[in-house]
Image 1 (cartoon, helix red, strand yellow):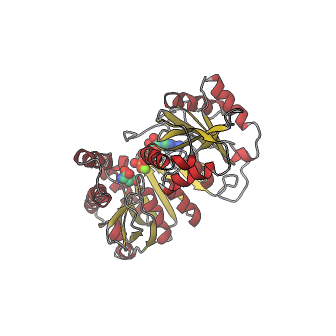
Image 2 (cartoon, rainbow, N blue to C red):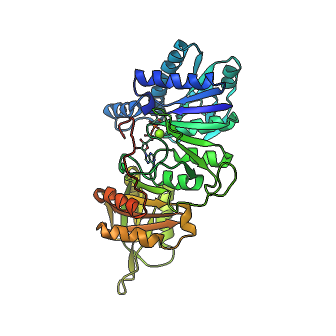
Image 3 (cartoon, protein in one colour):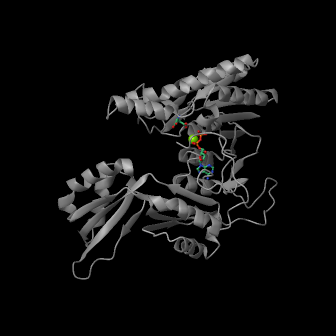
Length: 425
Ligand code: ADP
Ligand code: ASP
Ligand code: MG
């Protein structure tokens, strides 16, 4: 078998972690498998490098920022190769560029355009264990180093697994797989043996950072077997599958949980455009201006217009980082849109409930909103998809809201999930 193993920052947080991971990799090799490793920067190194950049300048040049951040993975990959040497095997480290991860030239959010893992194949032929630096690539166009975006090592691992036709891609982290909620927020969260790609996509998009959203999309497109598990235990973890109502032998699974889990996202802000004319074309002007400024919009709500004023409010959410850009774009288009005022609110958070079973089961919304009502949580915005309900509420109430909903859907377990490492940063 060819196995791609990705180790996140908390798994290689210190020298001891590097040694533990090296032993794990060598054990897989000894079991007769070919292994390709993808590794993240040690612990919170990437955050520390980012902090350092912002101590030097408020406006780091994107090219230099990527150059800086990618240095974290160079440290862990070289140390891991050295530790593997001591166990009698050859670890051979590669930067993203050496590994053939070709991206476009969008610094900080580069898309993979090609994967040419010749040097990794060569290493395998030589009996070595290739170790690839996560989350980075190389643009042919600019001949510069790029990054895939924070948390992108998962996507590196999946891209390499797909390009090399690996049998499985294992994502090693600091918890025993994917849970029905972030175990740091809800210790009674339930470990899920299986989750569907579609559910994991919704959870990742809703803020569950256990997997990078793009890694899930990529794996789904290629139908790659993806397993999330702990590098600190032997727990089998969670397998991400196309359909969890069929087991590994193709037999139907009878008792299907309706809900996979809940996720919380605190990264968005809410912007209200007050008193826009309730006439055709106004919403188009608003969202055209925001799109031209490359602001990613999540939820949108338009109120009913006042009977006398013929004006209405439009509210949307977008990443907090994009608020200054969004405001500038709306101000530049203010004559065309014709609003009275812009109000921003950074004190919000989003709670999402996700489950493939929602499609067939009525009453999910009723249980969801009743739980929020009992917990005294005020709902400010609502949006839904076929398998998700999301609400926006106050940031300081969202953890209570999540716990109430988690309990209402019977997801709480006795005992507490183990968080083996990491700072949750
Ligand atoms: P790594 O450093 O291994 O990439 P991350 O910090 O990116 O690890 O992701 C693992 C973390 O994701 C866990 O420690 C946990 O706090 C968080 N998390 C959020 N939602 C979930 C969930 N539904 N299941 C498991 N972990 C989750
Ligand atoms: N080290 C990078 C980050 O912290 C990439 C990753 O860990 O996935 O974002
Ligand atoms: Mg991660």
